[in-house]
Image (cartoon, rainbow, N blue to C red; front, side, top):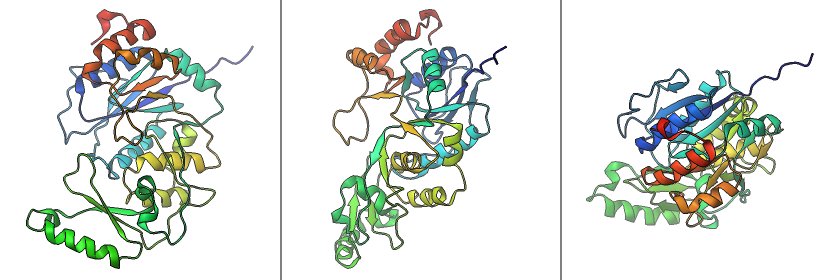
Length: 329
């Protein structure tokens, strides 16, 4: 007799810090949409208290260890790596990384069939951005390459008080001429102090074989890819150390490792996303006029949604996911 096929099990790594109304709807939908799926939630409690509205399920794991996340620094990288280490110990075949503003947009059996038939280990969007010359100056790099080939730090609080700020700014102008490679100052959203970047003394870890890549920080990975991302492999550890001094390292570390490692095979991401302008810090919030484009894309998830997207979400529930209206929260 033929062997009984093992059911593919999927884990969902959800990270959130606000929009709790949509978060509750997402978690409730995932539990109903995938009856065998497991969910791990990291909620940044430094921003707000978590309110799941009484939602309790043995397949929903609210991670007790949490870290505050600051937009732009390595804190989100640490959160995702911590979550992937947790998933590496669970009995799931794949893990899909979602934000609290995502939502499924195709039936789960189609996702399971797609992943089971795939010869890939990861689904993520991104591409190579090349390797600069060994003696590059900061002005030789575009803004994306500056993120990952420079080391960055926030100005100390004491240096950015109203009294100290003019002195700090004069010091930066002088240091630009004295510092090998120069300096660059950048303002980031949601940060009260600017960042300063410089060419580090030690050489970057990228090579022609392991080129720096840039893409999205929401992705799907199987257990092989997870084991590599959290491994003690010398190259991966060097990359983790390097990215701790980068800006928005999650948009480069994961795609760089998965595109560069010989044991990982990648394909395009499973998400549908809309951007107003390339390079914007956040995608647009999806509304009902996005429905046809979203559905024709063939993607399994979409982002981003918030409390203003309820009519679009109702339509997704009714026409795609077939979730009865009386069971929605």
